[in-house]
Length: 361
Image (cartoon, rainbow, N blue to C red; front, top):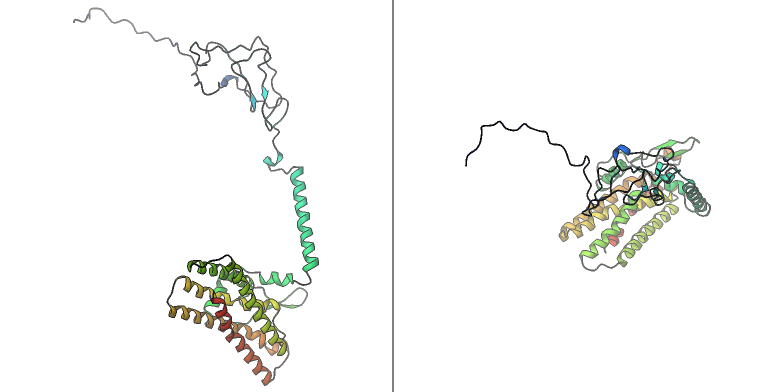
């Protein structure tokens, strides 16, 4: 086969584009509007084109629904408006209004005011109703229970901080080297001498730690019975009842002794707080049972917890049962002082009985 190279090659010619200027869209997606005719309604929409300018979009012969690029096509775009690209004849080229919350011609965006951070009338009414209900509840509680429940004292007992809780737990578990044990006081604006809250005085009793320790004790009791295979939902109620009963009995014994010995120091909340600190020592004993320590190690943990709690009560209640004469102005006789010291030791030693009752689940 021979090639002819006697004549020069033909001159190059640039190809003439025959494909449409715009890429057709796939059949599964709606026809996108022409970007050159993109319009956004800012005030009022433009009037629709007359029927003579609205031409029906021809389709290809294969029935794929591709628009013909040689035919001009106009479709204004507006958010929330729907139009039919395949049938826009006279009377059918008008934009259709969408569902609720979508812009319609001649109107703005009917979106709720709450989407823009503004409360509407319904939200304001709900807030006012809620505030009125809370105020009415507070007034009812203060009117019916304010005389029997000392809310200011409760607020004082729960005025704690994270650093106070951590430091107090360390003192309850390792009270041997803590100094000093005396509580601090201040003079209020009314000129009354008052104790500092627990947040400001580490030696001040609180009800937060006893409450949390009691709840932890109840939950650990349920865990322990579950490990032993004898869990019952009534265990939670029985543990709660037993713990509250022990606290009430101890409280009555202490108040009876204070009454017989004419001890004026110590409020009801203070005595209840000191009686609830024993649960902090019971929790390590229950953990020793959960972790399946040996019998000897279990009793060593219990003995240490009892000694720590007894020592803590001896040093803390000393300033309640044996107050400083300079602060109270009363001087105790030798017999009175001896009876009060004996009563203080009875309180400390009796903790072993209460703790033995509580650790038996």
